[in-house]
Image 1: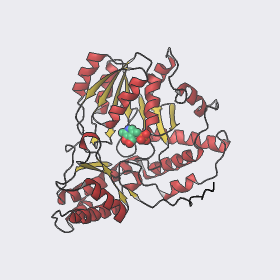
Image 2: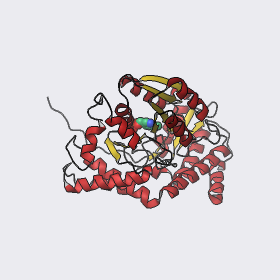
Image 3: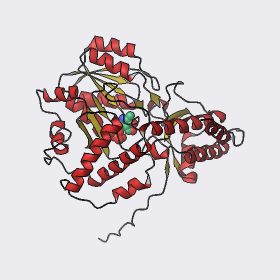
Image 4: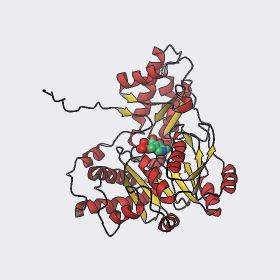
Amino acid sequence: MSHTLPPRIAPPVRILMGPGPSDIHPSILSAMAAPTVGHLDSAFLKVMDESQSMLRQVFRTQNELTLAVSGTGSAGMEACVVNLIEPGDRMLVCVNGVFGGRMADVAARAGAVVTKLERGFGEVFTPDEIAKAVKETSPKVVGIVHAETSTGAWQPSLDEIANIVHDAGALSLVDCVTSLAGVPVEVDKWQFDAVYSGTQKCLGCPPGLAPVTFSPRAVEAIDKRKTKVASWYLDMTLVRSYWGEERAYHHTAPINMNYALHEALRLVLEEGLENRHKRHMRNHLALKAGLKAMGIDYSVAEGQQLPMLNSVMIPAGVDDVAVRKQLLNQFGIEIGGGLGPVKGKTWRIGLMGHTSRESNVLLFLAALERCLIDQRVKLRPGAGVAAANQMYAKI
Ligand code: PLP
């Protein structure tokens, strides 16, 4: 049988304005093309050390156990859960979207006795309701999502929530996959015990690694375990020997992905965390002004809207899939559709990392106007772009 070889791949250049991955800075792509070396080569060990130190700066922590798990954000989630949970341990998980739901599933698979504190999609939790649930369930671990990418909701008061968790003698586990490097994340100041993120959101790197950090309290809990960590691959007691001074082989690190993360972290710190947060907020406010002028509302309450993930209501009578297809095929712009109960009702417009730029906001508003006109929506011509430009002039 003869097989014809497929041609070399030639992926199109897209503008990634969905829920992630986001656009990649060219210097990150070129870092990935550097020569692969061995996972114990001194050149690679230097990359690991420097990345670890930069990760601590980005997480705003002194935590010794800070590293990049080989795997996407979900591997980070799983790493945090399986290292803190032993079979039979109680875990309270706050669920107001897909990713809180996933955390509850991961915890149950790890053998936790899970209690879900549930809120509607797009809503957030109050410290009081968490305090009540903590009192009722006496958990070992409380898990919560900072930035629910499935709904666009920004969980406030995490410092207060972590305090409540600590006062009850429990550990706080926080999903910062979408929030890290887009909005403030203060691991030490806010007293988080286990935190995970992902590379493909506001860090602006391709998907493939999951930065994690564990507080000394979390490390103590890991060291006091009576049972082995359920996952060999994600066992921090083994992985830390590779990232620490011992340099004991554990698994073959994805070398070139780690080059990418190193460059992404360098870019974050070169820009400065505060400047980066301001950039994300500025582009969000301009997009929001533009959408408002086009009659498009957010699906999340004012004050709880994530700047890097804009979840908006699809105007009545507009075909969700047709618009997303047109944006992609005619303008090269990818946005996300709604998930779960809001499928077909919302769009998720990402402005994460390198995607969060004026040029993308203005192009998107102009392109969306064209799609909505094709959907026979009555619009004031140019209103979206004009409102965004007015906002840019103000902020
Ligand atoms: N948590 C949140 C808040 C996310 O947005 C995502 C991915 O979108 C994940 C976890 C899972 O990350 P990944 O898809 O990289 O495994």
